[in-house]
Image 1: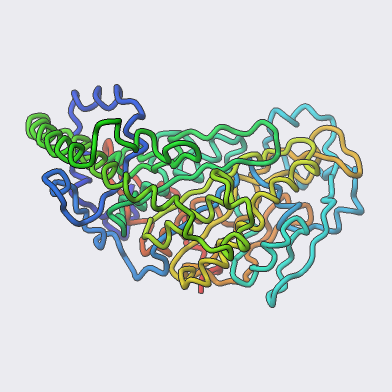
Image 2: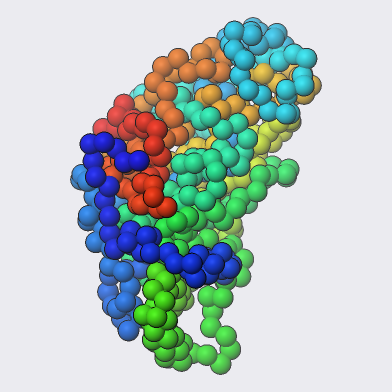
Length: 496
């Protein structure tokens, strides 16, 4: 259902979505994920018969207002970081150690199976000290000594919330706008709506990071960066940290660039004949993927070659940035992709699901990301890129003030908590030095300026020049949007 005051924006790709035939339906169901890694919106310059057939897209049709950001980098902490120990100080809880969470505060909230059987819900105050930083005086935990240096560049939102209480629905929700799998991801919507600024790199790149808390971590499925019902070229390209950054990027032995070019031109002609006969829009997407793969054979090795980076870069990001797959390395790659016009970069960091032994594991996780977050914002700012690059940090929900399992003065765990959690944003029109939203004294309920995950996504789209009401496509008789059919609002209180 579209917003009553707007008509949805459309393109030739929308018409493709209406034209699914029975043969296409079964064809889609039979396809594997082999081409998914190479899917992306291509650039504008034709180079061959195949690239001349790429869909131009006219991205300007999707811009509803002047964008504050040209690109976005999303730092996603999978597993749900504990806001109480990092961003939402509650010093008064120290006097309530091991007392029961008042029933009127929990107010019948749905619980997970991990704590629903507990006979009591003892309050576990954070053992970490908070201090004010920057001109803004934003309070930050001692676990984040580097990030605390950039508080005047970021807006801390302490009042984010969601309905989802388990990991997979919650991650799916914040990434795609719906708890049930199958919808396009945020990055796919941005690729679809805005296209790419670089014809040699994907519009949407995904980087999965290693983590230091050696514990089980929640699985991340490729559908979290998938295109859903949008053409498959808009799904994210996941770069690997070992071997070829993208599977099968290198030519086989005995095949050189000229042979590959001739082969792709011939294959494009065959695919075009197939499209003329069948009319399956995915045929054009397949041609586009082959062309992007050809260009990525040169662009991706250059992107991931850090030999040109000076020592000052590694002084800033830390020596971990020299190791492929670390969060610091991926943040450095994100800066390099921002320089090269990649529209949306998503960095996942797993291992934040601290149901027990939080004091053991949380410092390790913060150690992975603290300096790198500071370095990314600082680096972008020094290069004049922060003003038009939106950076978002956060997880899928928060964690409870009460302890899961045994509570001691120096050890505790926290269960899932969807009612409030913290995210922060920087650059791209965000008002730095802002603390937005407020939770109660237990960091359990929001008492001021709630921000639903729909509002967060609407704000991201807004800063990139898109009215979330209007970027939609018709699919199976419905007008589909990232923010769905329920109300979503741009969070104007954090914008300059």
